[in-house]
Image 1 (cartoon, rainbow, N blue to C red):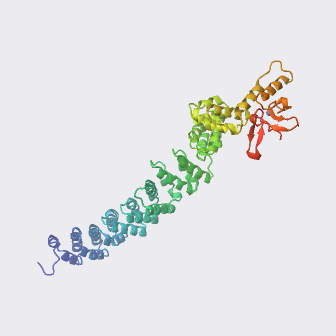
Image 2: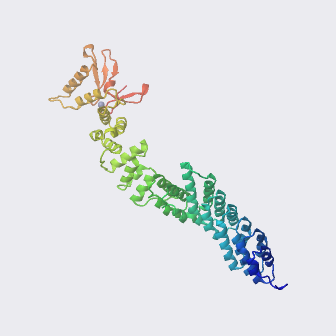
Image 3: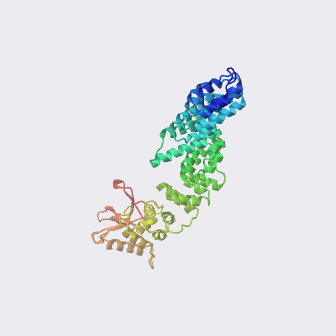
Length: 476
Ligand SMILES: [Zn+2]
């Protein structure tokens, strides 16, 4: 072996002579330095790390590339910063090698500290080539790696990260709900990164989330879209108006309203107003509103239900089968026989009709139907049966009636037969303008409301009696 000849790399490699190979890294001939670095790569000796890092500043690009290869093969926390630094090497071949080392090797390093340090370093240099490997690292099994990746993606600011971050936030939300293993830190970091990323440039990425199978993903995407508030967000928000979930449709409609969007055409209008639960405006859009109103009925509140029923009646909708909605529509149309056919579903609409129908005759009919279903109607009548009988007498034509005197006699006889008045004590009836009995007049001229025959509004001292035949309030 010549004393001052070049080191025999093959021989050193065969002997696994790390010390000799490390020494050869400093040899003047770059070919030898390259061969030594290549030979050290599979040995992965910790002592070789520092000399190999020093070679990243070698004047020869081939040597620098070999050093990158050897450090990449070694992997681990200690090589992260030097290799990330090599990403900005002046030589394109070295940069390619460093790219592979950092993005393929270190981001999948078995050591979580190395993966995390790489993510942190990439966030500092803000290299857009880091976006894809960082997106993969968001799902890392180690929370620290995942958090570092999310923060790095936020720092880089590339919208390719938007949808993966939406999916990540949705996944953590779903896990929290189901009580599974979840990370509040990851959810917050993802949400914070989305705050930073979701400007107008993120619209297309967020639109990609609207077709996702997962409800949480669609919900986060539509919320983010609705907050961007630029006209370009209108198109995806219109897409979200077609979502099967009402809450998503509603968020989309609110977002559209915020940017001054107005529906064109009755179909879009019906969906839009339906999403905002503006049932009256929805019904004004005509036939396309019908299925929307029908679908919304079961989950609407009481006031909403009344508007939906009114809208469907206005659209001429014919209910089929038994349902609370059908009962409500029949009640609103005054067809109480049809309402009663709805069985239990009839009770709610009948109670509403008994209290709120515009005509008191319909209120009385509804109260009567409730009694027929075994319900106690009470308000707004004290005695539904008596009031109904009086109304029937009023409505029944009397043969040979002249000037209403026979009708009057029939009413008087009815009141006496029910002990509402005692003609033998000098009682008589005071009638409404329509002929319905309102008061008992005693022999001393006192007026007493015939409450059993009347409807009423209000309670206690506020209670005011009304003629159920014509709706006129009884004079005090
Ligand atoms: Zn009257």
